[in-house]
Length: 619
Image 1 (cartoon, rainbow, N blue to C red):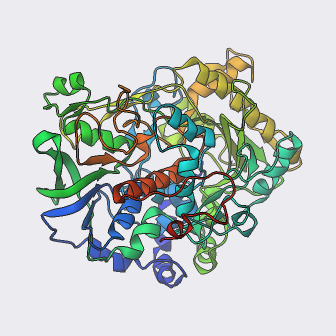
Image 2: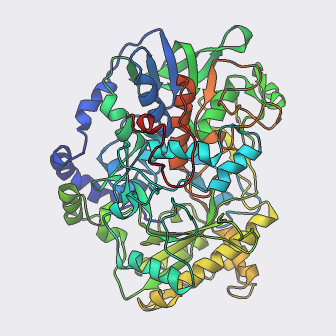
Image 3: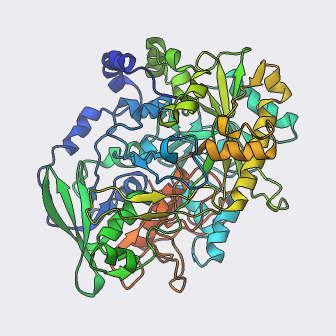
């Protein structure tokens, strides 16, 4: 993936950013938002307390505060976005910064052998806007079979026909060749379009797919399978984060209070297991605030279960071992999974120029971005192509791909700091080359991990073990995904650009024949990575399912009232694609549940006589 540019270069460009930033169309003046940081007082009680001002929290805060009578408090552990959050290509510069929770997995049993202690870091946004403010921005809804599968497992109200309108509700599709195909809409809050920048590598992506028999597609329409130039969360060249889209325009509402740099440490329960308030730390002091109606947890797949467990909601034996009083015995922290990929499938190319880190963050490119919202800095983290395909291990009769390929324009220095010495040397050997990478991703992994408390202290990070590639089916699908990536990178359209595979001879795999199935399986276990789509730790399901944490209305089970979860942790199974769009959908649907509203279900092209059109257009 795109690595970190030289820090001195970025610091030297700050005056330029400060000068131009507020003058650009649709760029907010963050100085006006600094009033959020100076809030010194708050009410003792609100109707709704939203814990976490990330992707889902921003949506819910907007929708609930649309009703003037509702008093809404958002409590966010991080601070405000800065100009670097707005630049699509610059998102990796924010990794391991104050804006990143910077979680780290436990040592993996059968994966991540190329990393020190077999551990990798997980980026998660610690900022108003959450991970939507520092991700690769790709817009994918998933597949209808994903959500129909949720329904079959007991998540009533979450079929594709029922969630589809909530994807549309927030969408403002700005690509005219896609916006009017019947599966998109304009007029929502969230800007969606392709990047203004497409290199020769990106343009060749569709040709490469066609050369191997794959069609070009809009993966968010009738058919997901195929090759596409991806759309992303972007407007006029700048990131369209959840904060900027949903919260920034209404941040000064009288009935909406936003507390930054404030970390919730416990949920408070009253009589009959009712959630009545939260305790939070700010400026080294501890405070309590109460909720009249509900507390809604939108802190994400790691922080939400962490907070529940330190508050006494989780597996009884685990909580007892830490002497935490038990409120409810629920399988919080189980069912952890995400989208793993295999790194290092890199191709050198001499026929075109690629995005090299030491060249791309130049004053000229910054100026082009700030003045016209164009140029390479508008690239979605270097991602210029996406493909969805079906392996031989899944039923091909329906359109339900189990593999995703991601074309990344640029070098691969981003994760090398975490690698073993031998793997660092291997990766550093590619520094002088013009390269691109194809990341093979398995979309429906069967491996399931867990999250546990390390201590009862709410400030201590939890233990995270994704158990990557522990299910035998996952490595079989990954090998097929790697083969597909190799086939695309060596296809005639890329060979015409003088592309060739960089032969990374991985030391621990050299006893296998080069590029045999055994070698590819070894490669996958050495170079295991994550797209960052972590889900499942507060699983949604019917009350009779003992693996459920929340019901289909997102209310906590175990006799608890006044408490909901509305983030990626509720997904019973991960969707077939990047999850940010689905998290926004979950929050939109949760808001309607809380407010007693519901969009009419439908599938296919948007009906001209759709009865909920007026409600769909409500912003």
